[in-house]
Length: 452
Image (tube, rainbow, N blue to C red; front, top):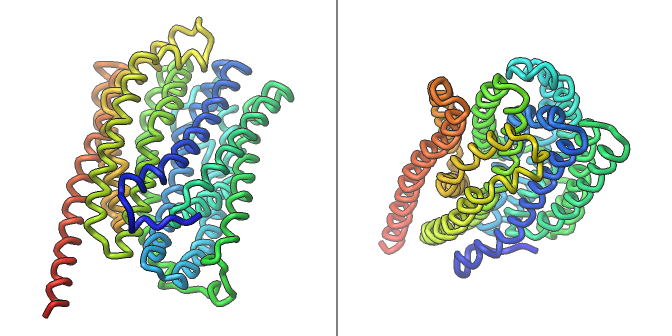
């Protein structure tokens, strides 16, 4: 189910590519929300806070994995767009080697540092034990997470967003059923929730693999598995900065989590509910970002630079329109959404989560632009500026979080989050237009030389 994004109307291609992936991502976030709902209502507010307190350190690892896989997928999409079938196979084979190596290292480091990090984040003493148990079980499944994301990125590089969509729906439904059984049926507590997530991730990995192995272009021969350091270097150049960028962004989240932890378990629970809702609201932006990475990568490989410009403009229009509707929904229905997570008598939780969602609703359109420009740059092979944008996010988030909460309390934490989006988006926008201008000049120069 490959899709050549170098021909046809960009808007139609982007929407066709994004639609199934958006639904799949929403399902993924939906089962994450169900996870929190089951824990919050099935065990209690402290259990919800325990799971929520691991969010930032979890994203530091998962974000690293997603960034790495997306970086590897960029080279696959570029070679697919160029029609280089041998290059695609070699790239995929080397990606498998690097992913296996990184999976082993990351798993060991994550398990060793989970408790020290939770203590560093000032995790409340009444939830830290459950928090460590939950995240340790999640970390035990890192190898499945890495290979699921690698296989998904390869399929997306081929323009296939439908397979990850089907896989995500199946695994999400399995996760939801297992979650209810393990937490409410077998009374396994937060451990049951984590075990359900790991099993669903393994299932996702297996299902994606069964599809990938059927692609003719991915019939990898023995010669393709021969170590090629040149290809490995290119993969690292694209993958590592994208991975670091996500992890650096996660560090900013860890800083905010530390501040929130200092307010107590009620604030942690409210922040957890808000972040789960925020993660769902961000999915259109995330999805359009994935679409632009594949679209840009394929058209760069095909040397169709003007299509990149048109695609960006069309994607911005669609993303902004969608995010305006999301903004209005968050603003007017925030209390009804939060009521899914906790009992109606938890007034403190409602106040905390509602405050965060109001602030987020004001700038979620800007977050959508951030994803588009960042992914376009990555698709063009520029992963350094997105990494720097991650550092800028960290600096802004840290600066604002140190100052404003002293005067505004939790509202200062909310402002720190959205101000980081705005600063990073501005850098990425400027960097994209500079990079595109260089591509355009290069194209004009090549055309002039061919006429001589």
